[in-house]
Length: 438
Image 1 (tube, rainbow, N blue to C red):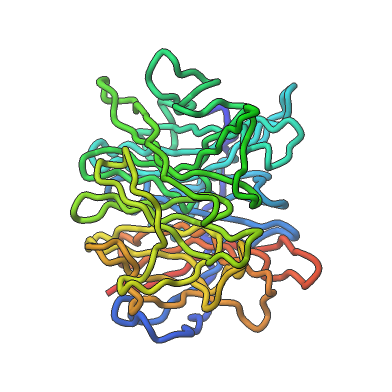
Image 2: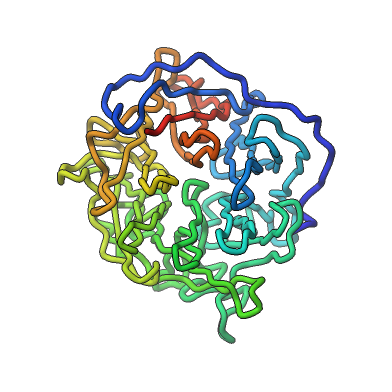
């Protein structure tokens, strides 16, 4: 892992430029989220490039934060990424490191995609996850049979990594070619679909990393039974500390049962949270891509055995049983220090069409008994404004609780905001949204 970084000194500077408090377009949710929501510019994008950022506390307590930001000039491809470190809760940043995301190899371009991080609450170790794969012609779709998952472990908050490598399940049958049950690199893939699929640590110490896998068809190649852009199946990687206490051992869960007649792209980009009764809640991205007559729902599954097996998926609804529409986009669950569970994502007034529209972007509270969304708590965080393109996408969020204020802090990029009806404009800034919590 150390060879992937080129470290250089970076002048301490704050990239937070405060903007005026944004207007809140709906009064619902005031009981859970009082006061104004603040939007701040986090990182300014270069021309014709989108910047996507995420931030993680690197120690069990205290103000140290790691920021990972990525530059993109085409879909599903990271041009370059950087690590930055803050010792004062994100007020200033220093020690910027470039993360290698591209390597030329004889058989193609080796691509790397940074994903999530988590602190183990017992050992204090900081674990970082990313995806990696060699794409013969550099077509992002080749990742559907090429991506695999890697991780690194640090004891000093992400400055140095004592263990790093591909996640391969224990057992003589598992190798880099066949790293996990049902996964054969070059025929199908396993990946962390988005930074919103954040890893968590359960109360019993088990690491859960939300992942998606792809299918192998009768011809031995990647199989897409839904007819959408891609097809994936949700699950989790389960990690436990090895007997030496310093390395993680991994196993792949059973998949979430999916039906291509209900969601054309399968079960995609899951996010997970532990409920008070010990069950694990999984909220899943679906899609009606190619079949707009299907309802554009968010889907849900539960595990009663620490993520080993999962119930058959069903529509994720409001706690009162009412359905709601949600586009094909990532979302995130997060557990607050108060024990409350929050969800950030998109809800649409009418049926969606594949990925669209990816606005408004909302926050809501999850019923801790049922794992369903409480409608009366839903509040708009951001929405398409008068100057925004219809192509605006408020998606791929990453959430943390501010340790000083208790606010939810959301990293979010306003993708496509400057586009026209005919031309997609990649210039898109990364923002921070501060959401007050009662």
